[in-house]
Length: 549
Image 1: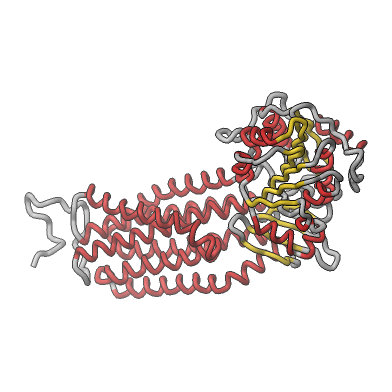
Image 2: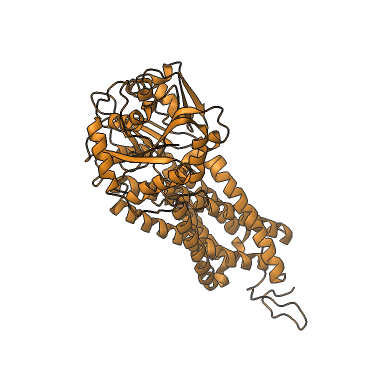
């Protein structure tokens, strides 16, 4: 019998630093296949953890480009450190790999729940929460990266102990399984885990799969390389990790309800995850104002939405307005204001999320607030991306109303680009008007004036203006804050534009607004000029966005 620990005879292939041949319960070929299968599963789980952190951080903090850059760069850096640190575990590769996978399953599986818990119970979308969330995001990225990085040298050691081969061939096999597993994990996250289970349950299930794969590989294939104490320790640790993850998965619905109440208050009436975003309705009964949140950001408050929508719609209706296009505005509130004007023959609403429109039709409080706008035969709804729809718009319009999420949200950046406004210009009638919700002026003046510069770069003449919120202590700016948040923006900014200069006037033949006056609009237009940042701001383009969160 050949002693696997004996030195290699002269002329034999080098051992590449491997400790000795593993004592396997199966043939080496099957054992090697099982190791590569474990690599495949662990790689898929690792990529799911990365994508889950990016997605959740983008939802909670905003600016998906920044969050993706932070997570991926920190994680790749940590993977390198983890690979170096794992060299000390090579003499005990099987036990080390088992410990690493158990830790990775626990940390990665619980990361989403931990981030959401901090988000829910520390309060607010800014200040202490934003800083704390970023630190926690970096900590999880660092920890997960360290553990993923430690996998590679340990797996390299294990696969070499099954059947020795040159390092180039072993690395090629290992990375092939790793990259294919990453592909499967990358596709499973958006198409399977996220729509079927959501972010929290999806991460917990991934952790359980990770723990089972790592534990089965070590305790099943390499159990003879472990001492009795090491086997029992790994078994107890893996069972404990699986128990914790399974318990969290069983309680995740209760956790989400408690967290949702912590974030939105106790009067949450509707909470659903559509294929586009999370939609939450609060209030609207027993005298409480109705609030609509999209992906955690306040879209409107019943306390002051009327002032916002009147300021958005009425100045643009000064002139011909037979055909009106509303981009966004699935809640029906902009359409409500449009329909108040005589002479409106058709209103086309282009909304990305059909579930928001369904709520606007069926929810008693929301449909009452929009005065059942979608029951009017003049209103036609198209479920589509506004940018894509404008490229093949079937007709021109007298008024185009852009009631879209704030330009500081990365997902909306293309809807505030020069290319987008060029498409909007194409569908404007010769004397048509475009009005754009451009975010809060007082809180983000540079972003507001970048919107103005971008519209001008598309060949339109602009008239910027703003109106203050009725209750500036509340979240006056849609998409940017939550109710009661200190420092919430106290105004809304708009840009009115046309092929020629468009005067800022309320229509003389239309219904008088309830919250606006011509004198107040003129004063606000003069005031907004004093906030101008620079004189020649560059426009925002698809390949060079200029908005920052």
